[in-house]
Image 1 (cartoon, rainbow, N blue to C red):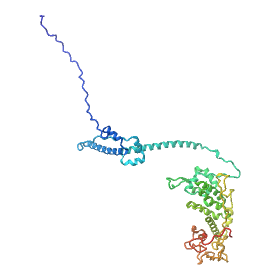
Image 2: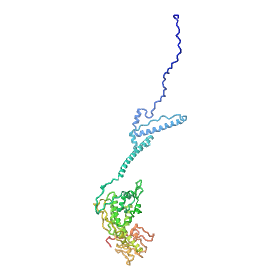
Image 3: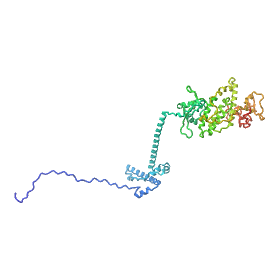
Image 4: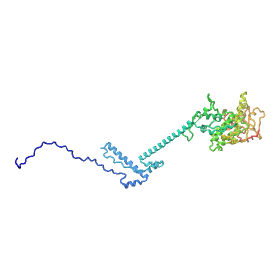
Length: 492
């Protein structure tokens, strides 16, 4: 090879291109969201001013914000439905002014809530209503849970039927402890009067022994009550059946049974007086039963006055009035006169029937071993006697001559019919064909003269005149003693 000659380098075979990663590229940038423009809390200064507003101003401002937000939301809604017709969407909603916890507690108070409800935004109204409802439901749930626990405890006690032996009293020969009254008796008496037959000793024991199975009925609610209560079914307990003899009707008792029941009836009503034994209510029952108990002829005349005793008890319940001894004495006398007249009439129509005294020997003569003197027997044997009065007797009085000791029927067959009263004044009425008549011969109503306005007459209208048999007045009856002086109790 010649010196100085440069030769080309050898040609090498072509090499495949080497794979190389492309240069890294920056990720696409998300579009920048412009910062939110505050509509309410624009800056710290405005926020501090808003926090200092009074509750009323905050509520008013929030109400305005809520109304404007509703307008914005409505615009966005229509823009979404039809962008062509509504090209401008609503702007972002504004935030509310914060109501702190102290103000929220105030708004939950019913009086504050009622005061501000007209200016309160809807979101607050619903929030407070829901929170109050949730709190109420929570309280009711806790109450039910507590009641369930208490009932569970009571049920356990009820199942065990624990007894208290300390209530047993010493047995004293010749004395009888008063029988306790079943609680349902007091509940019943508030709604309907309890008949006196229920207060017989054997019936009181029956009420206690069968308390769980007694026939009851639902009463109507009393004024101020929302629902009635279960009370004794008086009708079912009164009537008899194949398996139950029944307590009997009010007037079915003989004198001994009535005397026994009256003692217990007095104790029962004495316990109901909210002022205790000396209250007016208890004293009325004392005076009522004592009046009949102190009559010397109470046993012989029982059939005559037992209906009056029942009527006076019922009158006191429906129209309470203070006890009036004179009123009782007049009604007692009238009851005996009426009964004797009816007995004479019955005897005339049925001459073979037993006489009144014969019936009394069977009905009223049977007595129990209990004393007929009423006592407050709740604390026997140291209790004081029932207040006693003077022993009074009220014989019948003639409604023709005004004298005591005989009825007007005595003059029916008397040829010497009196023409003057004991004080010398002329007798106004007269006897015609065994009838009491006025001077014109019109028959006078005896029942009216005995009972006055309380009389229930069965004769046709106009058949007898309702006038005083002493003076002929239409304004009073003879036993009202308006036109004459009442005879003394000692007169014959």
